Image (tube, rainbow, N blue to C red; front, side):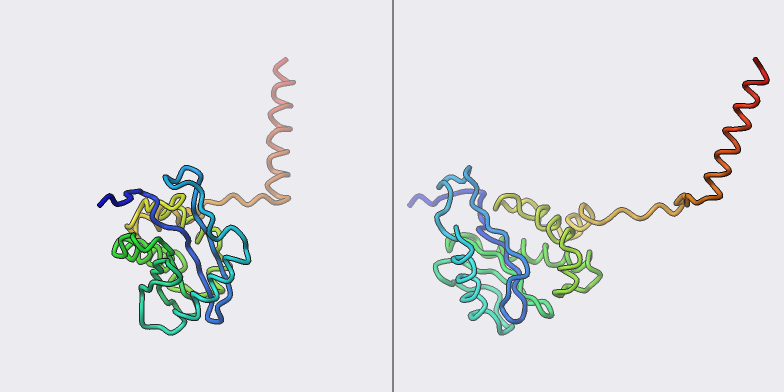
Length: 187
């Protein structure tokens, strides 16, 4: 039996809120995929229909892996959100679960234990960077939450921040004026 071995394992990453509304969705199936571009989830209508049915099956906390509409869905509940990785039924659910767990843990670290809708929307840049550090075009590239979070975290603000105000501008002007007078005096 020949199985289709491919690095492309994730078809979608979806975050839905407690009412089943989309917070974030990213669908993968690049042209370079061994089976070519997918004909699934091409329209927003198809995606929304899939997400609505998926939410109906997973809205109650308890499970973490289901087979829905010929897709493997690995998911995690977090306060008012559900995070999903969608894949083909032949994919390794342990690997998908590990990747989703790492992404979730990295997000919890970056959002200071506030993995909920408001924090995700306010820090969408961090969430997307975190996702990109975990999944690249549908390929799982990292499952180490600490490494993912450290690559994404915002650099600490420089403590010796220079404050520019009227006084510093006048001081700089005075210094330049004095230097110019010295130069002119030397001629």
